[in-house]
Length: 101
Image 1 (tube, rainbow, N blue to C red):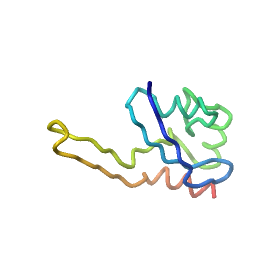
Image 2: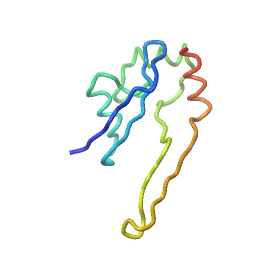
Image 3: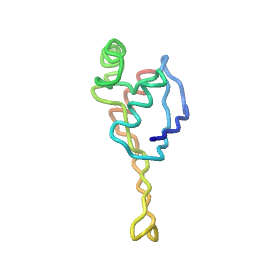
Image 4: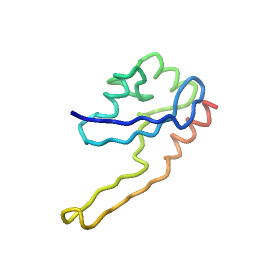
């Protein structure tokens, strides 16, 4: 089975900004698990709430799925060479967060 760990980092405008750590890597895993616990990813047209997504487009300018890979960790060569890739939050997502404050 697939496993995801959610941690709320902040709450803004009735929404939660979360860190999610996954133990597996299944297609749509975070999106499905978030929807299953009653908190779909903002902007998710497949698993989310259409009314909430519409409001986020209008109020926060959110034009896409609010999902960002801040850090990816993996190993090559049988686990001998670890890699960690980090990326800052995209400007459009940061702006949407600011508008929710």
